[in-house]
Length: 341
Ligand code: HEC
Ligand code: HEC
Ligand code: HEC
Ligand code: HEC
Ligand code: HEC
Ligand code: HEC
Ligand code: HEC
Ligand code: HEC
Image (cartoon, rainbow, N blue to C red):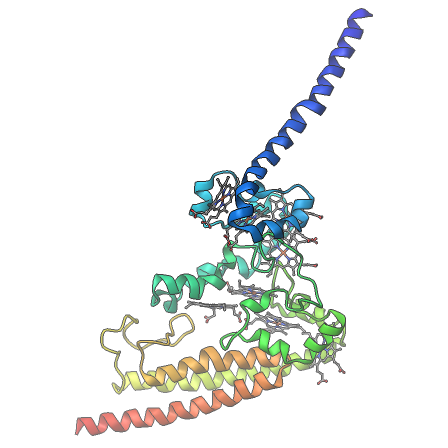
């Protein structure tokens, strides 16, 4: 009997150690480490601390070290960057979805491109990777430290607009000038994320039609998108025409590589991957505008219900540039023939 009592007391003793001993001292240890960061960083990066203090992370005891670790030298090497893998430990689903999207490949895409290779290190970093680094960052749509969920109607474009904008992919501008933007400002829908998702972003037709169907009949949405597809095919045919004219000039010897150019030699494929806006002839620069800007305004404009982007920045410019390209081809031929005489 006595031995059982001693054993029970011993168990209670162990239990008390577990509750008031190890466990609390462990959490105290973590907060202590975090407090060290705070002492300095209230001074050196005050705003980050203020944002973190207002976050769900602070509320749930997720301190500086949970994301940055404790190795200051390593933090400096990474310039404070926290890779998505780190968030995955606590946000498995969001990470898995994100990993299945093209966003997790953004950096590879840019680095494999000829335009990237032609830039200085600094332009590569600030001019390409600032957007394409989405492959290494979760904090592009959730600004770091506050990590708020982007919520409409205050932020109907959820941070997507920081990258999906400008003449080579004017999704923001097209959306902003569509009737949908106004509707979203009033009702919170449809936003970029409603149609494309947030972590597993997609442009898959079946998924997008599903999104339209929340508000329109399936037939209405399908009819509209089929018209867009038709315009896209027409536009590709115009691009093909321009491409062939330039390639023929090369084949017939009227055009030659720019001397000293770092571009590939021979007849240029004039594809998205290899087309540059520098070290080329004037006629190829006209083609660059057609492929990278006009065509993109056409697709992004019509698909996002912006007649102005679709037509005036898109169709009208593509056709006008093709006319310029043809006229330039004639000039080049005439000039070479004159030189040959
Ligand atoms: C003794 C003061 C001090 C302590 C303690 C401290 N830091 Fe720093 N930290 C700095 C200073 C100063 C810089 C600026 C780096 C520089 O100029 O070399 C910095 C830079 C950083 C950077 C950015 C690196 C960069 O290059 O942009 C991160 C992230 C960071 N600290 C996080 C932490 C975390 C997390 C802790 C706690 C584990 C911590 N720091 C503890 C003073 C401190
Ligand atoms: C939920 C994760 C998370 C937590 C918690 C967190 N950070 Fe950060 N921190 C980040 C991310 C992500 C970046 C990268 C921002 C970037 O690349 O611009 C960053 C960048 C930084 C930088 C460098 C960027 C700059 O603008 O100077 C400093 C300094 C920093 N954090 C300090 C802190 C401190 C101090 C704490 C605690 C109060 C903290 N962080 C808590 C995720 C976190
Ligand atoms: C140590 C675990 C931990 C890590 C690491 C962590 N988080 Fe969290 N995160 C949490 C917890 C806990 C919450 C609060 C969950 C809740 O309220 O349901 C949260 C909430 C969030 C929210 C929702 C905020 C809101 O206002 O609703 C976002 C967004 C978020 N985290 C993003 C990130 C990102 C991005 C990273 C990596 C840079 C990260 N988290 C790293 C634990 C973590
Ligand atoms: C403003 C942000 C931003 C900058 C700066 C940026 N990109 Fe992009 N890039 C994007 C976005 C967003 C997409 C996806 C566009 C889409 O799907 O419509 C993209 C698509 C691409 C594509 C695929 C489409 C194509 O043209 O073949 C390549 C390649 C690319 N970028 C390379 C680069 C290179 C190289 C640089 C620097 C010289 C660069 N990007 C600068 C945001 C940017
Ligand atoms: C392309 C933009 C984008 C990127 C990149 C992104 N998020 Fe999100 N995230 C969102 C949006 C939009 C929401 C709000 C979804 C909602 O309200 O239903 C969200 C919500 C969240 C939430 C809150 C989920 C909930 O239901 O409470 C967490 C956690 C989160 N993201 C973590 C991450 C992590 C981890 C990464 C990186 C692997 C990441 N996010 C990258 C756009 C993004
Ligand atoms: C930091 C820059 C950045 C932000 C912010 C961003 N994106 Fe992207 N997005 C890219 C880049 C770069 C690509 C091209 C990646 C590739 O093709 O590998 C891309 C591609 C896409 C694609 C094409 C996917 C496919 O399968 O072809 C969609 C759709 C997309 N993004 C939607 C969004 C939405 C919606 C948001 C906001 C919730 C968003 N993006 C925020 C940079 C960004
Ligand atoms: C009402 C639904 C809807 C909204 C809202 C919407 N999109 Fe789209 N988006 C589409 C459709 C439809 C396509 C065409 C898909 C295809 O190529 O079949 C598309 C295409 C795209 C693509 C792929 C471009 C390409 O050619 O590869 C990106 C990236 C994109 N949208 C980003 C955005 C961003 C960013 C926003 C918010 C500013 C947004 N979208 C708002 C429906 C929408
Ligand atoms: C959250 C609801 C919602 C979603 C999702 C949505 N729309 Fe709409 N859309 C509207 C509303 C509301 C209007 C304005 C209708 C009106 O004023 O009669 C509109 C207008 C339009 C118009 C212009 C009609 C006109 O008056 O000329 C087109 C085209 C359109 N939507 C296509 C689409 C397509 C395609 C999708 C999916 C890619 C889509 N919508 C997704 C709500 C939505």
